[in-house]
Length: 478
Image 1 (cartoon, one colour):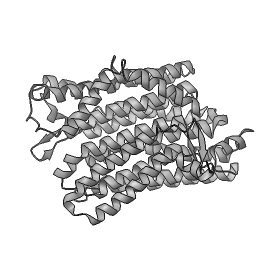
Image 2: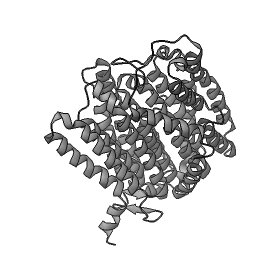
Image 3: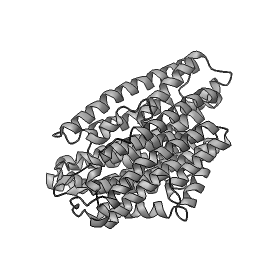
Image 4: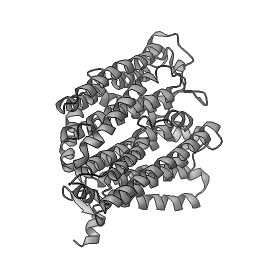
């Protein structure tokens, strides 16, 4: 196999997404408006093909495109999560976008382009590849955040995300330039080799700026300020996309860069990760208590959960990385189920978002109430649901890594967060019924059912499969 053929073979998911996005963009431009829904269906098929191409047998690990990207088990695992989040976002968006009269063909194309950027980001093996993937993802996300351009809240969300995102990109780029200047290379493995003899103050500054830029994409405190407003203002399917696929990609590249490029600087980056984890867990637990809008509540919840995920990364070892991967897989399931339920909160032609609108839901829609209760209990980490195992894996890794204080803070924060999750359950099961919600399409119901079933039965299946896959994939980073 020639070098070009080898590189192309190991880039199949990205090639499928890129060709699909270009083809659908041309088709959408020439088809009539009434056929816009076909573009969404085709985009789902393209992503399905990209998902299948991940599992094409090509060996364990390959560094491709002149050491700019790497195809390994870790990348494949995280790409699979990204594509699951993207596919589900498009599947549940159809009815919402149609009712809001914003079902334009550009939306699925932008989701495809953002997903392409995420896959590039997950596989990045150099600072330039990291920045290319990050910007391709971010530019598409800026647009879809404000996709409902006639809605003031959506326009405000898009503008806030753009301004703060540009600031974070600048910080990351400045940090990358510092690292290149002091290490003399943009390759992650090259940086690791150059820093074996120790790091200068310039390298430490570069590391801090790069991690600050990535913390923005993960919405880690104190770089979380955009999250509540953007989650609330964006169209709900877009919020689901932000909370799932985008988070997975940002966590994946953060794990890859600290483990691959800075193994010799563990004491330095560990301090940053521990600080971000503690601040995010505390903020996510306390700031969500007073929220009345369920999308804002999910925003603060996501900040807290990213803090829990960083608990595993703080250990810097194989078990900790496996814990992060398992956590992100379970978090993806919980978020998709929760946002599918939020998309079911419709009265007539109006989508409602207040937690009070869920009052008495158990008496008007038992299935929906059960799914939301399952997601809330799981997000709180109550056994035997999947959310308990997510926290179990990262806390066990932290304890084995000697980070006892971090594990204790995580457990206390989880206890506080349980209050606002259980409050939602109390409102659904014990308050007087509000006006019942209208029926939703089968796609949203299917996502709720599958997510709920997977959360309840996680210990039996798919738990063992996910854990084994994550542990095997984590080895590829070491």
